[in-house]
Image 1 (spheres, rainbow, N blue to C red):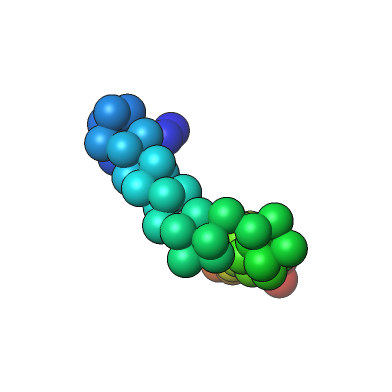
Image 2: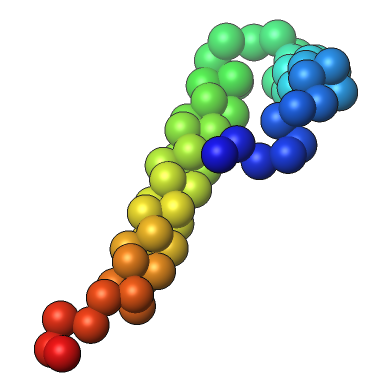
Length: 68
């Protein structure tokens, strides 16, 4: 059920580590400045969850025909 790219654990961990290092360098390891990056990440996570639910519901409703 998982996407095929999940099988590549080492590159995925390295990618996430690189993103963490980049964010730390950009925000100069300041907790107050990283707060906006954290908030943006949470908003992106919520948006992607909403898109996934919308896609799942649209696919589910297209399979069912309640008026037949």
